[in-house]
Length: 193
Image (tube, rainbow, N blue to C red):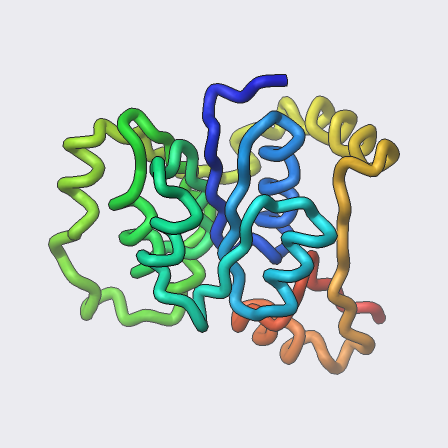
């Protein structure tokens, strides 16, 4: 199956959403690059999930690493984090590229009054004629049954790998939530009570 996009990039790639998005992009025929925040997550993405490349954004120069991994640019970007890393990625998008804006974890704790009014992204968005679209899963509620059927089939076929980061005990819900926001989980963060 040939994708209309040859290269897809996913941030927050080792999380619950990003890990599934990257694997679906692979199933659909894309070359996939993922960004994650630890070497263990990078290894998991490449070795267990089959990402073509994963980059630790905490230890790499993001712009240089992306230019090396995607010398012909990025066609499709699934953004889970926003912020500086997204500015770098969007500046390396190809003409008519598409961006799905799903999350903005980098700014969840930011003071909105101190965020810059102007954006370095605007010239890249305008001159490359990019399509950016917000993505909230509830918009597609009427099609969930289609997605679940396909996802379950891919899991049974071994094409899609799922992982849970389990925290034990109801008393640890707060720590599990804060840990998830800090990127301590790999895969879906759940609390076992």
